[in-house]
Amino acid sequence: MRFELTVLGTSSAIPTKTRNLSAQVLNINEKLFLIDCGDGTQLHLKRSSLKVNRINHIFISHLHGDHFFGLIGLLSSMQLLGREKEMKIFGPPGLDKLIFNQLELTKGGLDFQLNFTELNEHKAEELVNESDFVISSFPVKHRVPCWGFLFREKKLPRNIKKHFAKQHEIPIKMFNKIKNEGADFTDKTGVTHKNEDITTKPPEPRSYAYTADTVYNPEMIQYFQGVDLLYHEATFGEDKIKEAKEKFHSTAKQAAGIARDANVGQLLIGHFSARYKDINPLLTEARSIFPNTIAAEDGMTCKVNRKK
Ligand SMILES: [Zn+2]
Image 1 (tube, protein in one colour):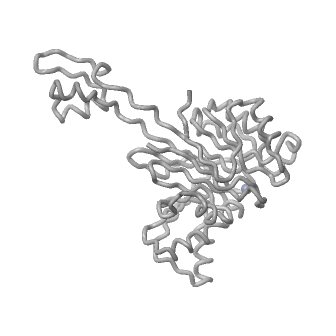
Image 2 (cartoon, protein in one colour; image 1 turned 60 degrees about the horizontal axis):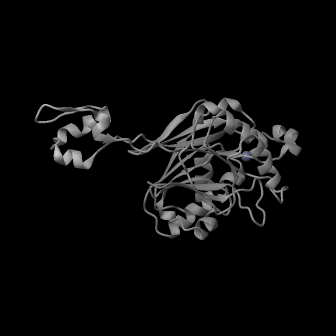
Image 3 (cartoon, protein in one colour; image 1 turned 120 degrees about the horizontal axis):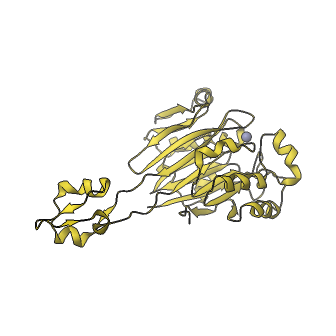
C-alpha cells in the first residue's frame, strides 16, 4: 500500500524563488490528503503528478495566511474543472465563514458540497476513520490556535498461509478467528496447528505526523510518540533562538530534540524563514541532535518508511 508524502511548499510567511508556502499531500493508497494550502498551492499541485480530483479531504492547521490563502483559488478551480464530489475540510473555527464570505462576495457558487469540521482546541480528536487508516488532530502552541495532524495505518490482520489453507481445507467461517483473534486450527484428523505456524505476520502499520507551526513544546510528544516520519517546522537556526520563542516558532535544533524525545523514525524539517538562502546550517544543527533528519524541498516526495 502506498504511504508517501509530497511536499509542495517549504517557506514560512513569504515565498522565495525556490520555496513556496506551506502545503503537503499525503498519498495513502491513492487517496490524497492535502495538508495546509498556502498561496500558490494549486499551481504546485499542477506541476506535480498528483491528481487533484483524488483530493477529498483538506486539513488546515491555522488561520495564518501562509497556510490557507490558496484554498479559495483551489476550490474555485475545482469548480471550473467540474467537480461534483463533496470536499471535507478540517480547520480552525471561522474557516468556513472566511470561505463562504469569499464565495458569496465573488458570486462564486460551488456545485459541490463543502463539509467543514471545526478542530478541537483542547484535545486530540479523531477526524477520519476508514477501513485501513485513521487521521486525527492534536493541538500545538502557536500565536493563534493551531493544530497538528496524525495519519496512522491500522494494524492489518495476520495472513493465513495459502498452501496450508488449501491443504487443510480451513472453513471460511474460521478465517476471521485465525486472522484477527489468533485462534489455532484443529484439522479433520484432530491435529491442532498453532496460529503462528499457519499464519504470517503482517507488515507494521506506518504513521506520519505534521506539527504545523509551533513553539518548542515537549508536551505535544504524547500525540505522536514513535511515529515513522515526523514533520516539524524549523523556521529558524540557533542564531535566532530568541526570535523563535517570541514568534512561537522553533529552531532546527529544537525540532530535532522533539524527534529524539518522541523516538520517531525520521525527521523532516521545513517552514524555513526566507532569510536563510542556504538551509544546510539548519540541517547540520538538527543532525547534531537527531542524525536521521532530512530537509524538505519543494516538490520532493518521500516514502514513509517503517522505523527500524
Ligand atoms: Zn503561523
